[in-house]
Length: 330
Image 1 (cartoon, helix red, strand yellow):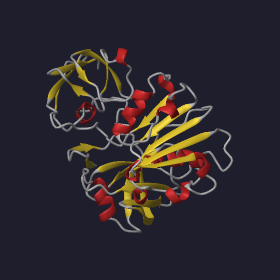
Image 2 (cartoon, helix red, strand yellow):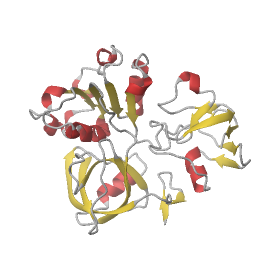
Image 3 (cartoon, one colour):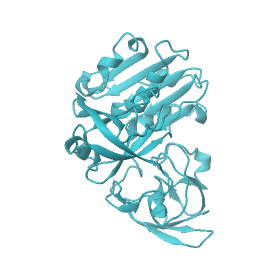
């Protein structure tokens, strides 16, 4: 099957990835520009199970493959719930899913995957969500139950109340004591996360939202153990910059050389060429595609590598090159 990625490039579907057919059972607008889709099995087969923090990749009507977090509890075994922000300045997938679908329509998707999983025995959970980044965190919160054993707190940062997905739900007695809302249009300025992160290693931090928010959290949590800070991003292939230029990647073991155009990741090019590389999030937050860098200077765009690792390692799903080329130990 031929698909289009978010850059509009065609590629072959990954071998071994389970595909599912989903029927749109419900579709509602829940905030300004934000829509919730309830998806059920489009066949007689039950849906594959999932864990909190999981996502699915959906083939939208215009042919692109988009990643969406599941925001319902894993106990809801008969449905997947995704929340879509219609972005007129995005890459087309969200607009197609909102504008070109209807209840009853069948969509093809990949089975759930999880690059943002809850750890066992976290001690305490600190959730930081920016905008639509609430979606994987909502699944985690729901999975904790009505009387959670693990203490948790959510800091939910949005532009305004009207664009805050699930505000009514998170304001109910079950959740409200744990939740702090902050709206940037309220005149109170940016929310100060330092008091939240000042004392290191007080449980685990899960952050999802714009790259600027995740960068702030990374900078403020440098005194935490790296294993206690977890990120999820929806910018697959990395945040593209206006001055991105093509560069070459050479595989040290085979000698094959590939040109990496602006707008495509190293991972995407190598996968299209049939090079086997483990990967999951495709946004530089999980560390699955960590690859040894043999030569060259990388332009690191991930949220995983520590400063001392950046000289000889690279996350090929998002990072690029500052030098004319890179040599990878592949």
